[in-house]
Length: 111
Image: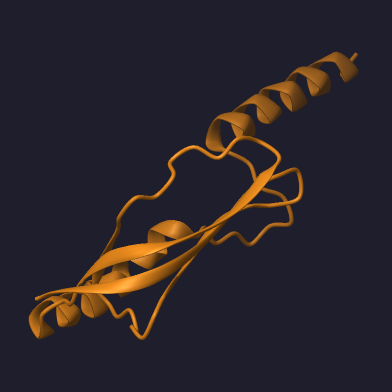
C-alpha cells in the first residue's frame, strides 16, 4: 500500500559536512520499508547547504518481508567489518612484500 507523506530534506556539500538527512512527517520507517522522494534536487554545488520540502511516496513492507530482512540482515552485517588481533593492518600481498624485504636484509647482514 502506497501513502503520500510530506518530507523535509537537509543537504550539505561543504568542507566540514557532506550529508543528506530526510525526515518524514508522521511515519516510522521499519525494516523492508521503501521511500521515494519526489522533486529532489540531484545536484548540490560544493560549498552549499540546502533545505528542501516536498512529497514522498511511502511503501510499507509486508510482515513476511520484515521477517526476512530482520533474519538475514544479521548475516549481511558481517560483511561490513573486519576483525583483527594485531595493532596494524596488512594485506596478504603487503605481508609477502615485507617478508621478502626482511629476508633480503638478513642475507646482506650475513658475512
